[in-house]
Image (cartoon, rainbow over all chains, first blue to last red; front, side, top):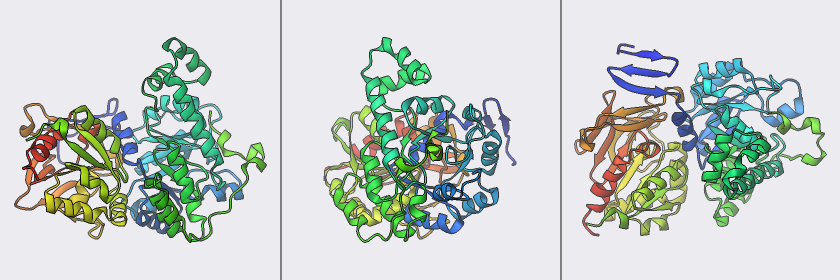
Length: 313
Length: 202
């Protein structure tokens, strides 16, 4: 590049012709999460699927090698997708592209940042690489999203630098019950903190296993310091509306779209239901005559070991 | 002329960062109202098109009939409009790489989407804009567009890296960056005072 450019990797401050600018800051990371609010992020495995998702109104796509339902069915170690697939999907669409790395897999996270993906999902859907530690997300310039089942887990991830939280739900199950459980749990715990006397907050932080300063912040504002999205088992427009009614600010739909019989129609319907979740007449209209939702699993009949949501610490 | 405290400002709420705009408006004493359906436009004095994904918002505008309704309110009663980032793209008459993308097409500019690069290039910075006083505007660029070409009636209010990033054409204001994500509310104040409150009574 032909202009005066200095990069200080410590603070990531660049100077161009005397102009100060900072990349990869907390505001810049959370800023992109803010832009995705009210939208649907869809799992895709090919450039064609990515284009279908974009045309249907997805705010972003998640580039994967296998959707969670297939990971569940096929078993084996689930890893970061082939960079070639991710790059092909980035080429295919103009909307943001996310990709998943394994929990604690620093090297996969670095590869994804190098590829230029817009958001990295450190995800329990893949087989964890580290059974004690997550990635130190503050050290990255790319923003991260992480799953959570309760407020303590959400605040631990934010403490590590996650710029967006999503419920874990039970990915690839086509059953929304776990996402509802996790969202209700987080919302209820935040409500409790918002009325808790200040002298109880250290004990709350200890019980939650969460950083004290973030507990204090939630107590003050009544909400997470980053956008709070829902994921895991969303299969119908009504599922999307339900999670929005319960307080999710946006949604991830994994297997629910491309494991259904008419992905294009279902994707469009879920996008509309996500925006007009509070207008049952719209959700009813888009739900009409929608062919074959993905087959769901009864989560209670799954073996404890088969549950993806227990991954993450 | 009315004071900003009496103004009812709609924020298009089909997708995007609606909340931060509402917070700035409330802080400035205006009344923010979410707009999701054509009927919501009847009770507002101005409309903000927030950041978000322009492809998603454009599609939902079309499906809900909000696109024609906003165009109609703007042409018929001069409804002032302010778009940030995706809002700028939706207001533009021409979009470089996705010319068929659904949009409002009211502002005589050509925009280039994701013009500064992907998220990794997104940044916090300051922009010189003498119109807003001596201290530069604080700005957040998130996968931002810029104005590649502007028609003769379009005023360029601020440039960044030699690109037009804040423009005005009559009752339309548009920025490539996100003033709503900083604590610098001068662009919102400008919209309220100069585009909305200064407007002759309908």
